[in-house]
Image (tube, rainbow, N blue to C red; front, side, top):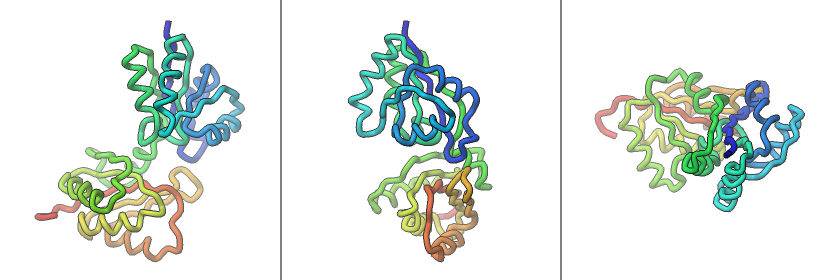
Length: 230
């Protein structure tokens, strides 16, 4: 009889956001597949949980996939976690989940922390329809093409961005979406210095230009202004 794959969200900042069910699964499982063993050890140590860990991330997931699936087929209970948030959302996990489904292995997905939903609800932008894009293309021409396609949609657009690139990305958003589109930059979510920067693209861009530094990973949310032509 095969085991079970548990997809377990972990806090995106504040450790109090972990669920009781997540703690129980982490204590009861046979093995934890995690993005970074060093980061996961901090979380597990905080909650006094001791379990075998195996790294499973973008650079080794192909080589580790078969071994994890074989363990599941042999009855092991494996918890899949990422460094923060829900595995599979711009984090490793999709390949293991997909292959487990293909092999008819039981999967339990736990609800929990998500930077996307936290940022969306706190942004003040429309929540009735939204598109999550993960990380945009890095090459300027490809990013611009992607943004042009997104600007034609009357939905809140959400993506992640690095503090080192957010200013340049904002300048491209201004170019494509126009100065009157509404935007929210959410950073350090659930942490001590959590911040939501809300306003028009022009207002928020001017605000971050005047800052000496921009720290923390960003969730960028944009709602396009109605424009006759992009």
